[in-house]
Amino acid sequence: MLGRLLVTDDSKATAILRLMLGIVFFAHGAQKLLGWYGGPGFSGSMNLFTGYLHIPAPLGFLAIAAEFFGSLGLILGFLTRIAAFGIAMNMIVAIAMVHSTFGCKRVKALSITCLRSLSLRSL
Image 1: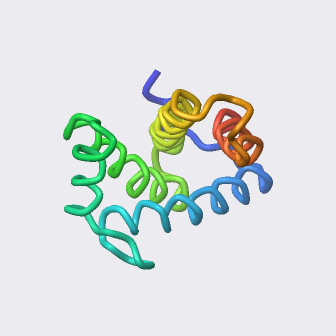
Image 2 (image 1 turned 90 degrees about the horizontal axis):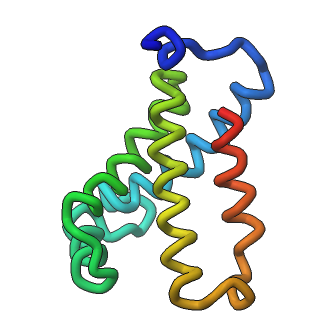
C-alpha cells in the first residue's frame, strides 16, 4: 500500500497537469500562508476562517497547509496522491460552502471549480 502512495507514473500529460495545478494552488497557498501576491498572510487567513467563515482553527490550518504544501508536492512530484487528496478535499469544502450560501444556480464559477476538482481526481 505504501508503494502505491509513493509511485508516480511517467506520463508527460500527468506531469504537465500536476505542474499546472501545483502552480495555481501554490499562488493561493502562498497568499494564505506567506502573504505573497497581495494575500492576507497566515494570521489574516486564520482570522478570516475563524471569524468570518466560522471554520474551526485546526480545519483552517489544514486548508492553508493543504493548498501550500500540497501544491509543492504536486510540483515536485512528491506524495502526489496525498497532495492531490488534500487539495481535492479543500475544493470540495469550498464548493459546499459556496453552494450552501448561494445555491447552485447563482454560482458563476461552478464549471471552473468543478473542472479543477475533477482534474485532481485523475491524479
